Length: 333
Image (cartoon, rainbow, N blue to C red; front, top):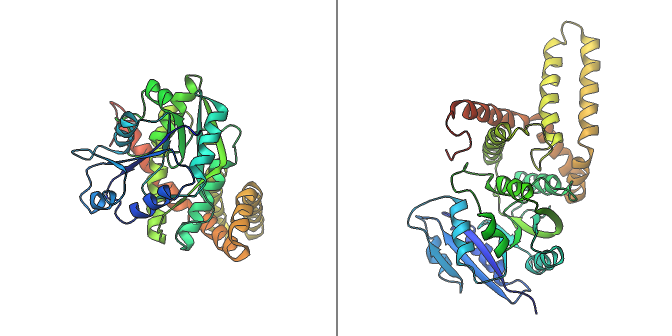
């Protein structure tokens, strides 16, 4: 018999996506499931939606953040295994069975991670771009991932509680990165299983894609400076992305200086562009394998020519936040 698994879903004003998420959980091919939704002080229709499903509802009296919501769900669990996902994620039919089998195979010392499907739930260009980008970034180092993301994280309940759970006095995001690093530092093994997949409901436009890049880059930078791993290859904070940002500004410099010595700077620009294509070739192949040649060309233009701008803005904000946070640079802000 399969051990019981608790699916823990933190929710804050997720009325637009929550129903899709819960429908997918109850459509899973895994029978021994306890579904716990922790509503984190929502002021939309979330609670009414949750009550339509036979899940356990925990309502926090005020908004406390995803870390507190996940911890509350884990403490209330009656299962041996925990599976964390988000209220804007849609599980596949085999997501829970694959996660359970992987966790049982590796034992209590491991935390198992999955990732986004390459194909996004919604079909805007920017949602597709983000799904492929995250899928590639989180699975490219599957043998030694730097972190396990909470959109698809499986762990033994006993291990989770003994570890202290997620840090509730933390940045608004990246609690899964901090938790993964803490587990690894205490001898636990991080395992990425690319067969454990969820679809994320992004509904991204250009503006939303830029805002997401700014926000992620800001807190990644703030955390990475404090953790002294700013140059590490860590998921979406990858070598490719960091190199892409640097080469973007080198290319701009070439354009600015072309009037001084056109042949030299044109040649330098071509070299920079070629180097970026080589460094990012696996990501480009991922774009192509997911959606074909037309999408991959559009994705390359966006990634090389526009995406470095919000990443830079977020990075500068992260540096500023770190410098100004003299008491605790990683406290929730």
